[in-house]
Image 1 (cartoon, rainbow, N blue to C red):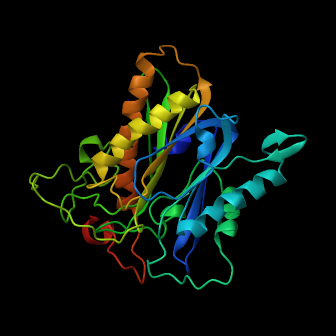
Image 2: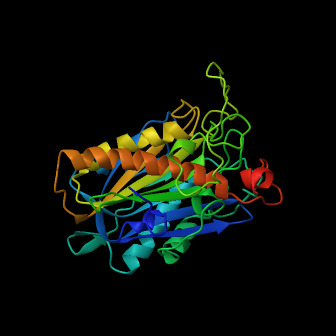
Image 3: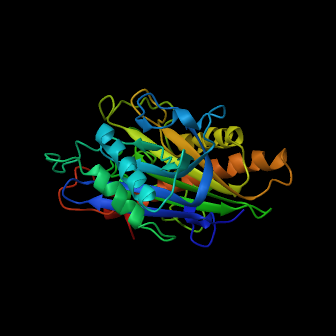
Length: 330
C-alpha cells in the first residue's frame, strides 16, 4: 500500500470535497460529494453524537445510496449545513426520486465548537449558508487544518482541524479518510511533538518526528472539556463495490484508527463516529480477503488523517489553544 497522488480522500475517483468557513464565528462545514449516488453507512462509538439521517444508513432500510455526506461545526445548529447541501443538490436535479420529486439524501454529523472564542451571537443560523457554500466549493483539491468543519475545532491540548489521507492497495483499490478532530483526548504523546499515530506515518506527512521514546502507560487522563463539548467525526471512502453491510463493517474497522491516534478516544463525552462511503467502481475480486485488507487500510488512513488535522492547523489571533506548528514546526 502507498498513498494516492494527492494523499486526500479525493484520490477515490468520483468524490469531491468542499469547505466553507466563517472566520468571525470560528466555524465551518465540509461536504463530500459523489459524482453519482454512493453506498454509505455509519458506526457511532462516542457517547455524545449529533447526527442527521443516520437511521436510513442501516442495511435493512429502503434507501441504499446517498448523494453527499456533511461534517460541520456548530453543535446541533450545525445540522442545518446538510439542509444547505440538500437545497443546492435539489436545485441541480439530484436526489432520490419519489413520485416525480427529487429528495437529496444528505446524512451529516456535527462537532461542538461553540466555546472557541468566536462570535456566536448570530441573528440567523449560518450553517445552512455554509453548507451551500461548501457544496459550491467541491473539488479534488481542498485545504486541511484550519478549514471547513475543522476551522474552529479544539482538542484536549492542541488546536484541532481537518485532516485527510489516502492509500492505494496492491490490488488497485483506493481508500481515503477525511476527519474533523475536536477530541477530548490528545493526538500527541504528552506535550508532544510526537503523534500517537507516528507508527503509521508515510512520507513525513505530519512532520516526521517519529515515535515517542518514553511515555507513562499508567497515566490516568482527566477530561479537559465538559460533557458534550468534544467529538471526532470522520468519513472513510473507497472505490470498491460494497454493500451497506460491508460498508458498515468498514466504518467499524476505521474506528481502530481513531483509537490509535487519539488518547483517550470514544469517551462518554465524545460524539465519535465514522461514515463509510463506497462508490462501487471496482468490484471485489476476492470477497474474503479484500474486505479484511480494506478495514486495515481504513484504520491506517484515519489515524494518519487525524494527525495531519492537528499538524496542519494554523495559529490565528484569538486562539484559545496553541497550534502544534506554532510550537514545533521546523
